Image: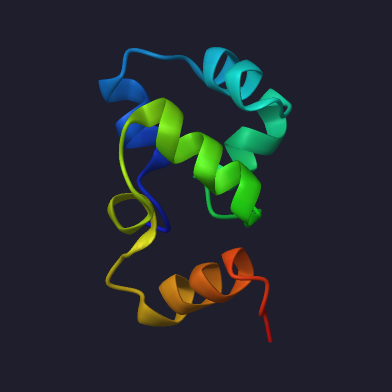
Length: 80
């Protein structure tokens, strides 16, 4: 699992359409983020965390250390 956004979204009782509108992105883009196809920037990550009332670590730190590091660097603006 690349991230836990879908899990937290469902726990919050929200559809992809509802969450994407609150974030200000398209539903297909949110779907791609949830499936690990797209990597969100810092502003989107912050919005997701605020809306889902959670933190970065809960959503993105996984057993895949390389993926977690990539997300962390991208959100910090230091992607390699």
